[in-house]
Structures are given as structure tokens and as C-alpha cells.
Length: 318
Ligand SMILES: Nc1nc2c(ncn2[C@@H]2O[C@H](COP(=O)(O)OP(=O)(O)OP(=O)(O)O)[C@@H](O)[C@H]2O)c(=O)[nH]1
Ligand SMILES: [Mg+2]
Ligand SMILES: [Zn+2]
Image: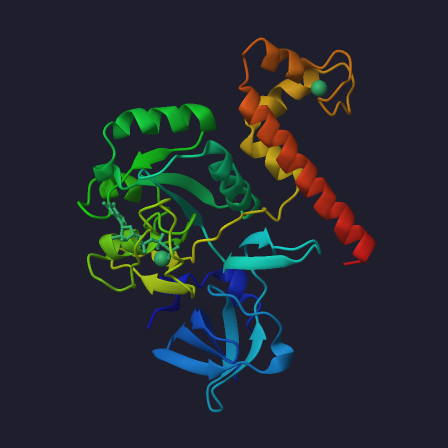
């Protein structure tokens, strides 16, 4: 089997000097075992305790005779969030990804504020991001919803899809980097697993239902899995999460809110926090309606969160 099909590239090749070990990419993992895409075929290896964290999408070197993993190769990118709780701990959602589809459901209110949080995670990973407003079949005016969200987000593509009817899937595919590893992320019940099945044109993943009372999902997907699409993509369905606190830097937040970071050099103080300072060009722009005040609030929250994270990390010495 050709390893390039699974994302093998010179970045990983350089780390794999040993002749006795073979590379494989984690397709599915439990605490003690990982199922891999490897040259021989699909193999399953045991994960020794001293190996460290193993995430879906990781490349491992394993000993083929013992069927045991020896090393996790350095990651090219990670999609990560802060673990719930006060301690600054990172949870890797997906490893070595090229693109992220942020899936939101048109059967409920679409929050640009939630999407922005996922965008920060995607940008921190250096991945291409596209937003799928799924369940377009349940919305009276999907084009209007797309226009509203793309105006709110400024520069990220938004596509209306339906996993049920197949509408919008071809358009979505145009935004997926060819041959790349693509993670589908978003709240529970928005149709991430359904979209993977629809893109594959087969029912590979289990799909859940949503509570009719509040449209919340039931957290049907509980494990991460990488599946190979016939057109070359590797799709990673992620479990829906209730809360997303990005694991990133304050600079990455600035790239998601580019219309705000473009104005901030015009503030009187170079280190303006856009709070109470005199001569703040960002606040002026918000007051004049040139930037959206909801966006500004979201930007300041995310910036403060990421700065607190950096401080927490420095204090804990990690
Ligand atoms: N009408 C309609 N229903 C959809 C669509 N996509 C998904 N659904 C339904 O929405 C429900 C949830 O779908 P899932 O694919 O399980 O959602 P998920 O995002 O994977 O949810 P978690 O795994 O819990 O995070 C199921 O009942 C699906 O049949 C769609 O495009 N249109
Ligand atoms: Mg799912
Ligand atoms: Zn300012």
C-alpha cells in the first residue's frame, strides 16, 4: 500500500531512519491499542505506557514482528482545545490535519461566536477552514443564512449542505485540500457523522438523533476515526463537544479577527488593549459601526482567554 495515500511526506520520512521499524498512521485508538493504516495493510499494534499521548492522525513507528508501537513521530499540526476545568491542559482533537470543516446545524440558532472559537483552533493548526451549515433541507431560506454568517465571519467560506439530500456536497468538496486530512468538528447533533457518510456515499459511521425539545445532540460519536475517501481525502469525524476553549496563541486570535487586527496599529498606544485607553481606533470603529461590536466582544474574550492560558502555562512551568 502506498503510504503517501495516508499522508506520508518528507516531514515524517526524515524522522523515520530506523530500518527495523515500520510507519503507520493511527486510524482508531483505544487506551492500549491503535489501529493503523500501514504499508502491509491495516494493522493493529499495542501501545506501551511510556509512549505518551497517541492521537488519531498520528504517525507511529512500530515493530512489525512484535506488533508494538515504538515511537510517535513529531506532529506537523494539531487541532486542540483546552481541557474543561481550570488547569491549563491541552486536549488534542486531531493530529496532522490539513483542513477543518466546522459543521453547524440549520435546525437551531447559528452562532457566529461559536464558529469563531473553532476557527481559532483551525487557524492555530494552520489548517484550511470551511463552515458547513448543514441540514439546509430544514431551513426556509438557507442562502440568507449563509450570507449572514459569511458577512459576520468576514473571510471564511460558508457552504449550505444537506447530508440528507446531498445538496451542497460538491461545493463543500471544492474547499477541501486535495488528498488532505480533513477533520469535521462542531457541536453534537449538527450532522458531522452524517456528512462523512454522505461524502463517502456509504453508511460507515453511526448517526444519532437530536432531542426535539432543544435541538441538542446526544453525543452519538464517542470515538475519533480516520476514514479513507475514494477521492483521496482522509476524513476524521470528531465527537461533538459542548464547549470549545481553543488552545492557541493570542496572535492566532488576531488572524481570525483580521478586520480588528488591521485597525489596531492606528490606536494611539502601541500596546492598546482596546479597553478604556484614549485614542483607541478599534473602539472608535466599533462605535461608528465599521466593525461589529459582537465581533469585538468575541475577539476580546478569546484574546483574554488565550493570554490567561499562556500565563497559566508559565506559572505551572510547562
Ligand atoms: N434533515 C436533516 N437531518 C440531518 C442532516 N444531517 C444530519 N441529520 C440528522 O441529525 C441527527 C444527528 O446527526 P449526526 O450525524 O449523528 O450528528 P453528529 O454531528 O455526528 O453528532 P455527534 O456525534 O453527537 O457529535 C441525525 O438524526 C441525522 O439523521 C441533514 O442534512 N438534514
Ligand atoms: Mg457523530
Ligand atoms: Zn485600541
